[in-house]
Amino acid sequence: MSHDELADKEPSSSEEFQLAPTGSKFRSLSPAPIPIPASPGIRSLVDSVSDETVNVDVMASHQSENGSISTASSTVSLLESEKAAYEFLAQTPVRSTDAHLIEFSEALRTVAKALRQVAEGKAAAQAEAAEWKRKYELETAQKQQSKIRGYSSCISNNLDKLASQLTLETPAPDQLGCCGKHGICAHQVLQDEVPGPIPRSNHKVGGRKAPFKLSWGCNGDKNGQHKHDFVSFEKGDITTAERSNKQILLKWESPPQTVLFITKPNSSSVRVLCAEMVRWLREYKNVNIFVDPRVSKELLTEDSYYNFVQTWDNDDDIKMLHTKVDLIVTLGGDGTVLWAASLFKGPVPPVVAFALGSLGFMTPFPSEHYRELLDNVLNGPFSITLRNRIQCHVIRDAAKDEIVTEEPFLVLNEVTIDRGISSYLTNLEVYCDSSFVTCVQGDGLIISTTSGSTAYSLAAGGSMVHPQVPGILFTPICPHSLSFRPLILPEYVTLRVQVPYNSRGHAWASFDGKDRKQLSPGDALICSISPWPVPTACLVDSTTDFFRSIHEGLHWNLRKSQSFDGPRD
Ligand SMILES: NC(=O)c1ccc[n+]([C@@H]2O[C@H](COP(=O)([O-])OP(=O)(O)OC[C@H]3O[C@@H](n4cnc5c(N)ncnc54)[C@H](O)[C@@H]3O)[C@@H](O)[C@H]2O)c1
Ligand SMILES: Nc1ncnc2c1ncn2[C@@H]1O[C@H](COP(=O)(O)OP(=O)(O)OP(=O)(O)O)[C@@H](O)[C@H]1O
Figure 1: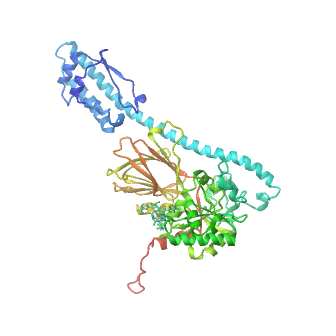
Figure 2: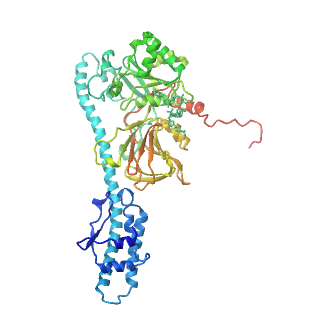
Figure 3: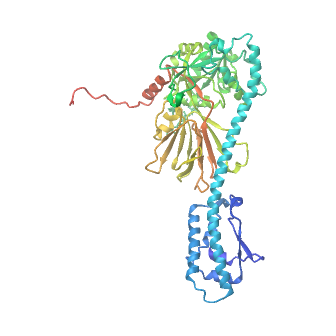
């Protein structure tokens, strides 16, 4: 709306009009509308005021797209307009006592005052809205977690009752020298089972999940026990009491009974090996086998012998898988491990990953020796890497008043927020807990686990980090800035990535390279470390496997050695 149009606009019959932001977003937070007297005399005088003196265009800038109050540039022009209005008043001598002129100058002062209040009110309203939104998101995330905890404690009470009955047959953990103080037992994981009807396929599986215990070896001492207090502060002096980089061992307390197979699709070598391994496990180890519906069909097409193999019918069955499966075997590459992890939105059973892909960073087990290797794992103990996952909540601006948000995604590698098909720079605001981190202007941002540090984050210039390091990687993708270096943050922080209201386009989030979700201006993504890591079995141990992967998989720092002959010191 130009100032001419504005001046042409007739005031209401009440002889007053109101100046207030017309956008809906911050309407309730904006300063109260200010009445401005209006009369026909004002109209003629406004016509005579030049563009430089009163920039009435600024009023139009309040009505940006979506009805929201817009950008900082409008704030600047608002202030300029106010200044111009005062300058105009100072320069223009009152030549007559014309009541209209006085009325006009009063109106102009009111306009100037109103413009300033709108500018100030807008900034305050935006800050307040952002703060409320952040609080709301944190509260929703906490509610979600306490809901899960609520389930667990309800089940744990029942399990406690059950456990007290079982003590007649089973020695108490302390008698066993079991985890108690020293580690984490499988039954702690079992307590998180979600209550509900027993799925149809349940009747086929006999017995209960095999309990196991975890222990932390120290400096190669595999019998060493993990102490929970890493930091001591005796006599007021803070010392590091324990080193946290312990190799974790998993020891079965009774033999595992059920194995789940997850396999790469469309590969005949994988199909053949899967059938062979399932037969061997059944005949020589007498374990129950679970496979996904596609593999079940493939096995039954091959031979009706495989009709002992169990599968699932729906998502509810998948949710209960962790209560039945002792061990997951994956046949494929890293993508298959990611796929297997994505089936488990809660606790994940240990994963034994056989390498049938091209790179196989997270698949240390050579398939040729599967008998011997599976034998070792089924007997235990074996080393595991506890790979942290990041849980990601998408918070829609449109749904910010709703308590129930979309289901969170759990990523083993990373969540990527990028510009998708948009040709504009991505514009993302990032907050870490309550601190503003930065604005990402570039192709996007990768928020990665340490396991994912060797995947997309590495390609975007991030560091490689040992998977057992507790941290979150913050890696920009093609930032349009010379000084934007990647960061590694502690694992306890919560990150919020916000698409600003004034962003030119949408952003896209993808989770371990899948499930792309569009993020509109105002939408946010909240990321924090999930309480459900993925335990992957090591071929040797976590560190040896990591170095083998970066040497063999990525040819890290491969260079011909310098020859012995030549100049010397
Ligand atoms: N420019 C890039 O490097 C790029 C681009 C997109 C996605 N990715 C990665 O691909 C992953 C999805 O994998 P996929 O197999 O489903 O897709 P895919 O089939 O496209 O394979 C991606 C490649 O990344 C490797 N990879 C996956 N996870 C890894 C890890 N933790 N460490 C080292 N290498 C790893 C895989 O072995 C594979 O070679 C995403 O999580 C992302 O990290 C990388
Ligand atoms: N059980 C499964 N069901 C559906 N898709 C799967 C399954 N397992 C793996 N995939 C998908 O198949 C693709 C290829 O799998 P994977 O990465 O394991 O094999 P690869 O590409 O041959 O190996 P590498 O990743 O080592 O190069 C991945 O995108 C993965 O998400």
